[in-house]
Length: 296
Image (cartoon, rainbow, N blue to C red):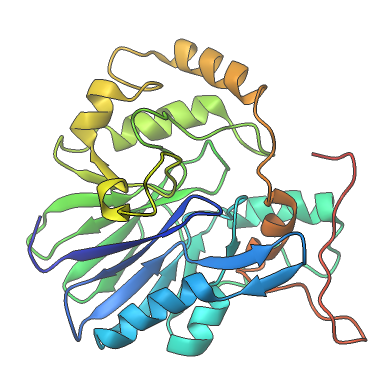
């Protein structure tokens, strides 16, 4: 990997989520990927502890935040993107197919005020579109399956080297396999082809995860946040070389039927389809979340 590219991982233990800062050293432009807003479902209170770690790193290194990249509308944590933008500037970016997810969940939550056109985000990227970050190019790879709108972010150096990808929820660590496909709009067939596309990249390409559920991750996030394409092709329990589409879809469908819903899916999705903004305050000044009963 080109020495100028730096990836700094942070880990939220409650949701088992990695957030990243991507930069080229002190004083450079940077991007933040998949930032977490801490949320306590028992009290209904939010905190910014996780986001403040990112801010400290950005400020200590005199970085200029250009982009806050969301790989998808997460179901396991609330996004701190708008709070980070307020503190540091930058633009909130997500894949253009977020509009499909907005339309689906606008109905589920009966969010009559929600514009399902992606206008809550600053930039919508379609397949193959890119962003410049210093001498880096970040290209969007549409990898549907977990949701219709998942985007991976493929980082390419000025020399034309393509050696790292932020894969979102498409792939987990090799011993954990792949993400579920039973959320509204999910599709195991699409997931298979999205994964095979990622694994068609050069063998030494580094794939950075959104989640890891193993013990010890919080103590050393850097040791658990990435694996190469070669490692996945050789040993990913769900999609290693030799697993065909029918076998994958059968396994994924059967496994998904056994999984509980994520503990924060109901609060998280209605916030994240608004680019991390809380629902509008009501006439008493309080924000309220909606919990649809007997739907999911």
